[in-house]
Image (cartoon, rainbow, N blue to C red):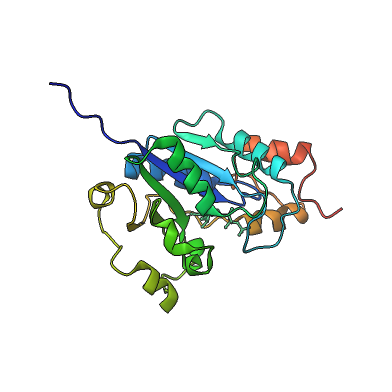
Length: 220
Ligand code: ATP
């Protein structure tokens, strides 16, 4: 008798990545380990719906992401939102990933605590659960306090363990604290770069080199 194949476990980690930093990348690696993911698609948003348009182009942010990931096992720099017109709705991205991996795959949308707190303001947030689970990563400096709209959205969906999450292909929410939470933000990195302050060890050296080479994030 042949053993039944385990359904694939696929993560989606979207963001502005303006620029990608070690908070994103280390979280990605630790998330793969914690959830036993086969793959984590890191997907830059060209036009994030809920924030100002970034100054650095989507193509440049994707190039930085590729440089940051390098040959890290499990992490993929995925350009699918750059190939699509219109706002970067995660719902459309999850639909595409679901199409790629099929109905049995365990599809996980990963969010940091700050992004998760705004989930109720997203485009058709209740439909996200028809396609994916949501995994929330604790992020230093952000309170766990949830709005009533968010609590309503999550009602009956929360689980406390990875096996409970992976029992179903989609529809559940799990909060995790990864081993190495990092208080790094792209906002602080942009501020430092604009002031010509050091960003060493906040992002991979390959990303720092690329930013320097292309003179990105400078004021003048
Ligand atoms: P900005 O400061 O410009 O808002 P950011 O550092 O929050 O940027 P984003 O690209 O906006 O980075 O974030 C993409 C995703 O990564 C979000 O879900 C966010 O919560 C998560 N994230 C960002 N930084 C961290 C971190 N240090 N630890 C865990 N998750 C993070």
